[in-house]
Amino acid sequence: MSEPTRPEWLLLGAGGQVGRELCRALQPLGQGVALTRAECDLSVPGAAEEMIARYEPGMVVNAAAYTAVDRAEEEPALARRINAEAVAEIAQACARHEVPLVHYSTDYVFDGTGESPFAEHDVTGPLGEYGRSKLAGEQAIADAGGRFLVLRTSWVYAAHGRNFVRTMLRLAAERDHLRVIDDQVGAPTWAATIADITALALFEWRRQAWDAQLSGIYHLSASDSVSWCGFAQAIFEEAANLGLLEATALPSVEAIPSSAYPQPARRPLNSRLSTQRLQTVFGIATPHWREALRVCLTSMRA
Image (cartoon, rainbow, N blue to C red; front, side, top):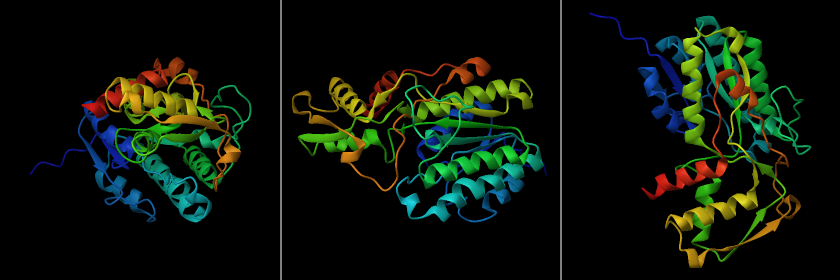
């Protein structure tokens, strides 16, 4: 009897927004194994280590995370368990098995001061428990000593799941007027963009025999930036152009400051991320946020 084929990749968090897109985007890299939270729950100590040992994949991509930003203020231990302690276990297992790791982080590791895009080497300063747990995960990966890519992204949305785009489309059908924050600025990033660029980076990294010099943190977000209010207006305009919303019945949008919409967790006002390192090292340029939004909405219409 022949031995089972060793999978080229193991994906954790396959049921999430980015995970679902990665199931598609990673296919050209070869046969893989995609696990949802029901199959590998990072809140359970040792769960991910067990899967890495069982499958012995050629690479691990971790798209699983605790992402409830406000709830993390009430559940800091759970956020840290999933975003830091489990990530440490994954990174250590990858280092032991000598397989590269891809992990996703967030703009929330920064304090959001200034108006310039943050570079990978800029000083971090999370404002809340979610950001602190994600930063701890980054540090755990670096401490493990293996080969890794940490991809920081921002304002993720998809055609599925719970996200700002789908919420705005729903509210557009329910309300005549919306109040949306206008002093937080960042780059809305389509989950499919994240998945496709991850696959491209992995192709190139594998071509270079997993060169350890390429290990490190990279920013992966759409190009240019917009406020949440501007993003909402763009969603309505593009959706109306595509026939997803009735152009004559779009809600009016009122711009408000963050102070007018208090939330348990503070958000960075500046979530801009510089993607120059990604382009320099891997030769990958990210699409404009509005272009990606248009393609996403077109896929929803289809």
